[in-house]
Each structure stands twice: as structure tokens, then as C-alpha cells.
Image 1: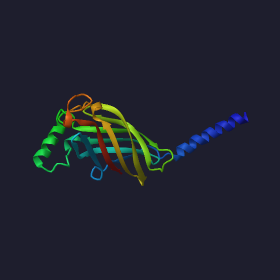
Image 2 (image 1 turned 60 degrees about the vertical axis):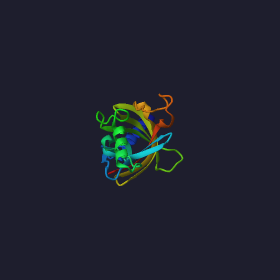
Image 3 (image 1 turned 90 degrees about the vertical axis):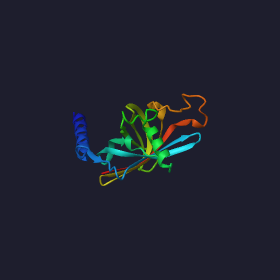
Image 4 (image 1 turned 30 degrees about the vertical axis):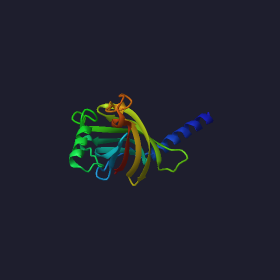
Length: 201
């Protein structure tokens, strides 16, 4: 009997301890769209192009100073090309990227990262995480995961990450060597590289 009572007391104390550590409802931090950025690089046989996409809005949820979820909405109408100086050529490529061949911006003005899991990397310092979630482009959602460096201090989160995604999984097949033969120098590689910095507070 004493053992049962002791077990109950230990359980109650453990629950009480966990509740005491909780700050209540998770804190929601807003992404600072002016301090945050998204950069892209797409490579082809004959070279590469790079540019930016603005973050429209976003938020991160913190519980006990730990990120538990996040949402980042990118404004696809804001896509830029930074490596082409000629205005006409630059505008032509931006128009092509916004077309049905690529991101179908007229029908899908935003793309969204939904971040679900933030796992600290074992054996590394406390700033390294593996993030997993989903990426929605053109109304198509696929799972995605990538490493990131995250700092949390005084309810301010700063994060930096590099990731790569296969564009064909989001039905972006234009000049893809995986679907078309004989493209030669016009072939565009399937992988798109993304680098982003994020500030939320």
C-alpha cells in the first residue's frame, strides 16, 4: 500500500513539475519581413541564374523557449533575377519564371513553408537543428527537410538555412532532363537551391 501511495505521489509531483515549467500557451512570434530574406539559385548546363523572393508574412510558435511550429509565406509576385543587368533580358526571364512553365504566379501568388519539427542535432552545438515540414508551390504540397542554425534569445529567433528541392516534384518540368531528351545547353537542372535568413520577434 505504501509503495502504491509513493508511486502516486511521485507521479503527481512529476506532473506538477512539468506544469510549473510551462509558461502556459505557446508564444507566437511574427517574422520580420524586412530583416528576413529568401535567395534562390537555379543552374543549367550553360550557367546559372539567381535572385530573391520576398517573404509576405510568417510566424513561429515557442513553448518554453523551444520552437514547436512555424509558417512562412513567400510572395511569388516579388521574384527577382539578380545576375542579369540588361533590363529587357531581366524582365523577360522574370516574366518566364512567373508563367505556367515555372511558378504559375497568376494562379498561385504565394508559396508556403509549413514547419512542423525542429530536432537538435546530436553531438553538435545547441544552434544546429534538422527542420522538417512541407513546402507548397503551385498548390502542390510535398514533404521537405533541411539543416538550419537557430538562435533564440529574449523571444527573438534568428535562423539561417540552405536547402535544395527538386522542382519537378512541384510540376515544374520546363527543360528538365528528367522528362525531355536532346535539350543540350538548354537543359535546366531539377534542383533549385534556396538560402534564407529569418528573424522573428
